Length: 234
Length: 234
Image 1: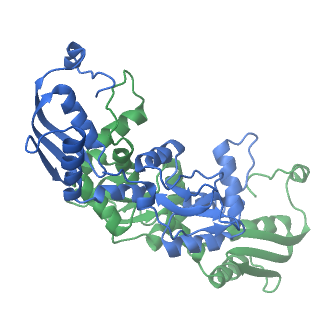
Image 2: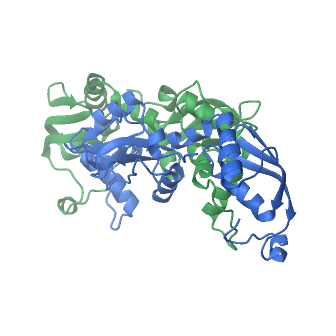
């Protein structure tokens, strides 16, 4: 069982532009290639920034508006006005770029997108050179993984190899990425671990717990009955 | 000269899902149709919400994370956890939807997207039924309008019909959507109006002002020299 990496789902034929690419040519590239953003690269393919539909939209939004000045314009408005007046990639782009390495996991990439508020990450090598791009849509592809592949990972890797559960003790059913585990295990802690490791299998949408156990080895089991879960195990 | 409306650029063959559509089927629809979001509709095609890659991403992002509880989780985290655990469109979608009418202008649609923080708007009729969808990319298509079409609007509609400027007084050059106006007009106020109306022509990326004037009829011209612009004219 190998955790999926960015290189497994990224696009390598990336639509990119140069610092001096003009506004309309950028729109042309995005439309032709059916993408919503393009990395801006220098002559060595190093990524300088990303120009997205958001950066280009200001010109539509502020079209024909009087250019009144405010004494203290807020930051968003100031940036919007600057980009509405810009015509070259270098002035339109968002920089510095938020990038990712090809060997990052999909979970790492997803968290970086969320925390930095971006919808795609240019994938760069150790020298900062563009080798691909990964979008939110690419990350979601892991959920298109066939049920049979997911089931094989749960049965072979999680139950048999990692937890040492004998074949036939736990029934594993997978439908549309939703994994249902049914059966009886020895300990409560093994049940928790089985559920947790199953959730980490690439492509798993949800895990339904239909597992029982003989021995309750939960620490602070009084607390657990109250709805909490002991840290470090759950 | 007709200002472009949402109906001119929207997609009418919309990929949509129902309230009960399951997580993986939604991912399937987005991937197959190469879109980043789909409206969720009821049996009468009324739009209930929108399910986007952002709504689906939480499941990737929180994959395998222990479900620790916080005493007071913040709103974003609470929503993220709820959506990470959801498996049906009705629970995953963002609702109520931010929609637009087919006869709205592109500028209105762009401003609504920006103020509401969305990247596409379902287009609905008077009864709230889905008739199309408009993305930021669709709105940018106005900037792919041929230079010759833009020039015709500026010459015929702005200069000749609206301002009554005689032919040959102002030279109009359009390259990549950038309009350069060259020549000599009678009044400062006419110059301002010519620039402003030209910026409103559909597809104009920028207006370069190379116009002179004989009579300075600017109110508060001292203020104008100071860098400001009188409200109501500029």
